[in-house]
Amino acid sequence: MGIILDQSFKNMMVTYIGFAIGAINVLILYPHFFEPKYYGLITYLLSASTLVWPIMGFGVHNTIIKFYTSYKNEEDKNALLTLAILLPLAVGAVIGIISYLFQQQILNYFDSNTLVRPYVWLILVIAIAVAYFEVFFAWSKLKLKSVFGNFMKEVFHRLFVTIFLILFYYNIIDISLFIYLLTGVYVLRTLIIKLYAYWLLPPKLRFQFPQNKIQVFKYSFLIIIAGSIATALLDLDKVMIEHYLPIEEVSVYGIAVYIASVIAVPSRAMHQITLPITAQYLNHKEFDKLKDLYQKSSINLLVVSGLIFLLIVINVEDLYALIPEEYQIEFSIIVLLSLNKLYDNLLGNSNSILFNSDYYQMVLFSGIIIVILALILNIVLIPLYGIYGAAIATFIAFALYNTIKLGIVYWKFNMQPITLGTFKVLGFVTVLGAVFYLIPLKFNPIVDILIRSSVIGLIYLAGTYYFNFSADINRLLKKLC
Image (tube, rainbow, N blue to C red; front, side, top):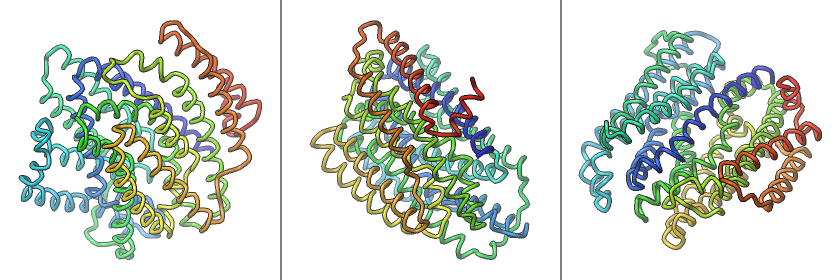
């Protein structure tokens, strides 16, 4: 776990810097500088592009990770990387032509929401930029280098958003220019990560298919479905809210999603480095190492994310006291969304195992059913319960999907991440959460947050070390202290 912990820690620090900047944007600047309808517009455009980009990328960002280390000769490796450059371009061109031919029908979908119509075409631009960013980020991971790419993914664009929000506040730019500049930043970061990837692993174009081209294309096609499933589960609720409710509700729900997504940071950070290592273990049939990585990644992520979950749950009411009233949301919605993210962390590197194995088709089939279920639940629950219905739908869909993934790994690899330490951590989190949520503080919201966070942070770290939930984290605590 040496290189994994090292890069995971660096990635986590980078990601938290990005999320801290994002928190300033999402919780302070956007709500105070933008009307809810404009904030909802930005949230919708980014969510819609998130639903589209996996199709643009045609799954090649996962394909090069899975197959690159399996090739023995440079010709196949270069052919695979050449394919990774050209395939998203071809897919994007086809989707662009189709979008142009049916542009009127697409615009008619937004007849009830004229605010979105002028910017619909930017969804395609952002989607292409994100798709290529993921391709070149995966390219850099082939050399086990993920920190710079993670900086570009988590920090770079958020810094520019902060600048653009300040410019908007002082009337230097308007909402239209803000949106175009935001789109430009996504394009710029793709160009930068491309240069970095080429520096690490210079491309040697080979206009031939690798020898196992059928397997490569089959995997890439199925990864499109996988990526679409993952992004649909993440952003379907926000897109459905735009369809059934005023666009202002998208911004209200989006803030809650962002707060909960902070819990996913450890998983995102560790995934950047465990993905290529998991693929290597699978390609070389090193299942003992894979099981060890599986269980260690699960407990390490659960310990770290458990603390973040606690800090959110005990501070969320004070946090919302700092946000304009029109963005307020029910406490239970935050809890539901946060529990989803906590469950994600418990899975460890399950996703890396499944999507780099021969059993990814089972996950895709299950995922399709889950997305259909999520769609039906959103259609039924949003008109009945508003954004609370969207949270319920998302919670049910994610819980089922994660449980299915755990079951498949256990069935096919005879390994699972849950140990006695898992129950100890969950019990510790539950007890601390119940105790501190019931302790009232009536100072200034910022003071309350600082006091609670400091006290619970110290108790949690002391408990983690005393009960030895994770040997890896204990070594890291000793090193830091």
